Image 1: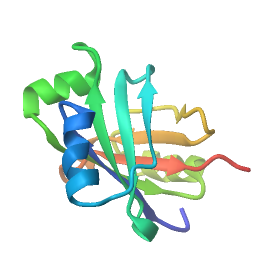
Image 2: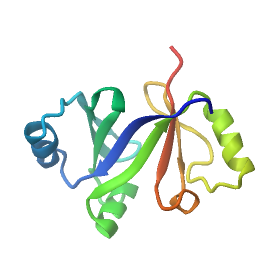
Image 3: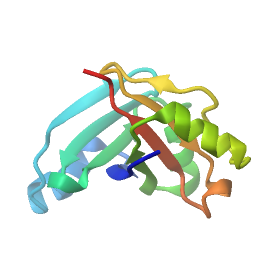
Image 4: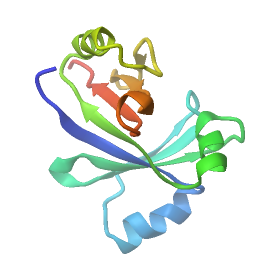
Length: 137
């Protein structure tokens, strides 16, 4: 891992449109787009914050998804921090060598080619951490 950059901060919300009333309409963040992610059973609104990454609003659209379970148990609020890495395989090797607990043992791949994993909060001091490696263009 040669660099870290905040990619996004994810906030779990009950309803994307209600949450956008604050984040977009009141605060003034631009809405890049909303994605209906069937693999994770969530709708995600992407709100860029300039060079500091973006805010992702995440709302479940099923009652049995991981995010729905999280929302029912902990309520709306900060969910995870995501950092960009330039070499996810090297990052994973380093984490495994340090016996870090991973939620995602093998990288998942987004439609845009971004590879990602989640690190368990027990290994980070209480923060759910996601690591992103952007798709190679």
